[in-house]
Each structure stands twice: as C-alpha cells, then as structure tokens.
Length: 176
Image 1 (cartoon, rainbow, N blue to C red):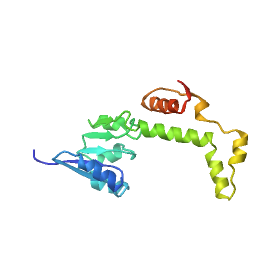
Image 2: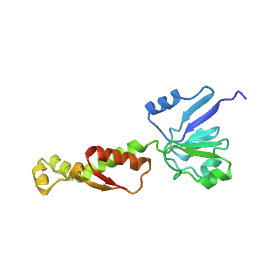
Image 3: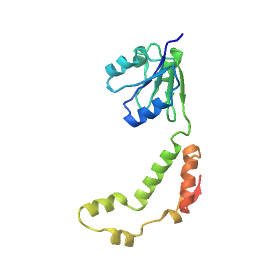
Image 4: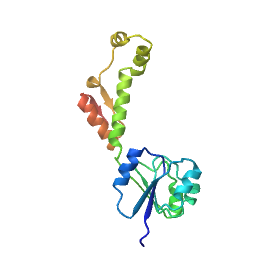
C-alpha cells in the first residue's frame, strides 16, 4: 500500500546523529526515535513501528509484545548480545548487525587504553592535578614505548586487524 514504513531508533540519540540518519532514509520511510527511555516511552513509540534500530536497549519478548508490527531489527554494531534472538525467531522477525562497522572506533579506543597504561596516564594526571609534575619520577622508573613493544593479540577479526595496523604504525612487533 501507500502507507509509510516507520523506523524507530530504540535509544535516545544526539540530534546530530538523528538528523544524519534521517537524511539517508528513502522516501516512504518515517524515522522516529525514543526520547523517553522508559518501557512506557518505548511502547508508545513502538506500537506502530515496522523496523527497530537497536543501539543498546535490551529487546526481549515483553518489549516485542508492545511492538506488534515489527518485522525487522537492525543493530548498527557487532553481535546480537542485547537481542533475545529466540523471541525474535518466535515472532518471525529478522535481525541483522553490521560486522566491522565500529572496528576503527574500538581499535582506537584499544590503542588509547594501551597508551594510558603504558604511560601511566591516570597516575600522572592525578599527580599533575595535585600540583606536582611527576614526569621525571615516572620517566626514571621507565615508561615503555609502543615502538619497542611486543604485543600479542587474541583473534584477528576486523577489530584485531585494525589494532594490529595501528600498532605496526607505532613500530610495535605484533603477534596474534
């Protein structure tokens, strides 16, 4: 029919992201987002939704009962960990995720954490905020460098490959 399909983002999202997603929606598709993250807020918005875009909300049988028209669930990330797959299958709802979509962001965060640990960032920040300049003491204790590090990665999927590439750019020796 000529009825518009309703796509619902199940989590509150920033205005800029919402506008960006809305700008790529094809004609005949209405995009909405849940702004009240309570179950009632979700139910109010999901009652006539055809598609759910699920970021972090847990979607289970109880919530699906409040969204009777849903036929497709999209996870803009990796995995189905917050989806009750059995409940989706029972209702004939298809689900998909986007492998590798956030691999670069996760890899960059991994490198950030490695550098923070290697450079003892948290300790140095606390000392600096307390009015002390700890770099001399920390340097004398020997701060490591990623350029001389030997790093072992468990798995070499999209995230592992992105981490390995960034570590190699630092000069690290990478094993997996």
